[in-house]
Image (cartoon, rainbow, N blue to C red; front, side, top):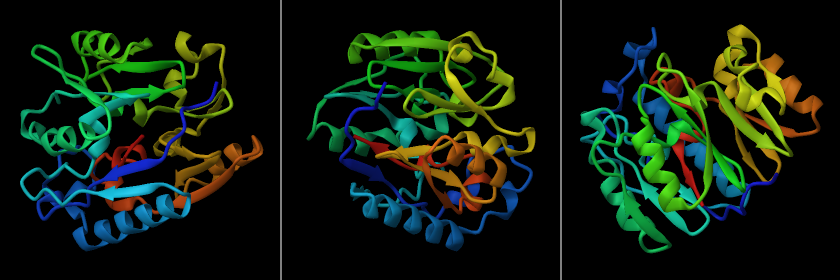
Length: 254
C-alpha cells in the first residue's frame, strides 16, 4: 500500500539551546551545535534534490528540541492534527507549525488530557500505526483518528519514548523494525527487515519516491534494505542521535 504523494517538507534548524535537548543518550552531553546545523543543512539539501519544496522555519532558541518538528503535527491527506506534547517544556513548539499548516489544510488541535507526538505515528496511505508510549496516550490517538478520519492500529509499549525509534514503513508493504517488535501482531503478517540488535537506530528511515534515507554507519541494515530493491542514501545523523532524534523527526512532509 503506497504512501500519499509528498510535495513539501517543513523543517526547522537547531536553535542555540539545542545542546540542552531532552535525552537519556550516553553522549547527550557532547552535542556539537555547529555540526548539528551542518548535518541539518545536508538533510535539507537531500530533500530538495529529491524534489521536495523545503519550507524552513526560523530556529526556535527557546525550545531545545524544536528541530524535531515531526512531533508537532500528524498530517493525513488534507488535514493536520496539531499535537499536545507530553513534556511541558516542549509545548509551544507547535504554534508556528499550526499557523503555517493552516495556510495549506484544515487543522485541529489536541486537547487535554490528550498527549500525542508525531514520532509515534507511522503513515500508510489508508491507515496509521500509532504507538501508545511514554509520549502518546489513547485519548490523543482517539482525537487524532476522529479528526483525520483514518483508522489506526495500536502498538502499546510504555517502556519506549517513540514507536518510530523502533519501526518505520519503507514502501511496497515493507516495514523495518527492531527485534522487540518483529513478532508484534501489528507487524507479524507484514514483510519486514529486522535490524541487528546493535543497529536499532537504523529502524528510523524516511522514504521519498522509493529512495530510502537511512542513518549512515549501519551497514548491515542498509544492505538488507538494498536487497529488497531500494536505493539507499546514508545520512550522517550523529548529533541528532545524541538527542534521541532521527531522520523522520526532522521534517513534516505533506
